[in-house]
Amino acid sequence: MRKKSPDSGPNSPSPRPKRPATPEKASYHHGDLRRALIEATRQMIRDGGVEAVSLRKLAERVGVSRTAAYHYFRDKNVLLCTLAEEGFQRWQRQVAQICADDSRPPAARFHAYITWYMTNAADNPEYYDLMFGRAIWKRQSATDSLKTIAYAVFQKQVEMTREWQRQGVLPAEEDSLRLAQVTWGVLHGLARLLIDGVYTADSHMAEICACAARILTRRPPGMTPE
Image 1: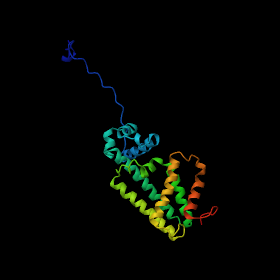
Image 2: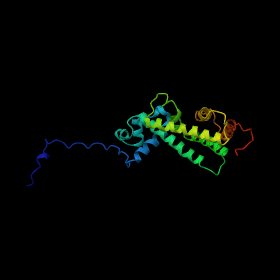
Image 3: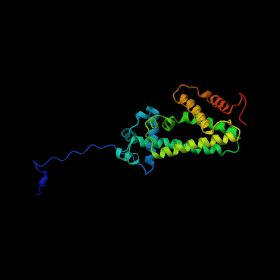
């Protein structure tokens, strides 16, 4: 006769219910997750502004644990500063290409810079807001690495201004630092109007850029960059 197992009697404890399956976390290679978090943050800013970003919501959006997100960014400010740094790095790469384009005369390069600046701001508002907006700079919360690259970018703007003055593109009698500040201020104001939806007609972008180039270079209407 077959013996009953000690645990199979009428008074034996019932088997434990199985735990409900939890959703699996997304799997990323090292480095891929950092990129995924950055791209998801960009989209969150596009959808709801900087205020909509939190590491908890970000982790949920990407499908990883909060611990995984904190491994790359210890808080929201570091995350936002990282995006701003990326924006400045993009600026450096593109400006280097424009300045190195010997197929264009200096005035045409200046015009190309204005056009790229405006187009880039309109196409990547989440970068632009963090690079030049109040979310970081008004609160004086920029990381040291962000301050370093932002300062380098402005120094490059001054160097470009000085070179354009030497080449006869910009007025040579103006102080290079002040002229760089005014030039950047004009472009920033126009970019902000585009990003904030005040200027909504993209078809007028080329005309706006051409007008800005003429005013800053003191060229009469109808005169094309040489």
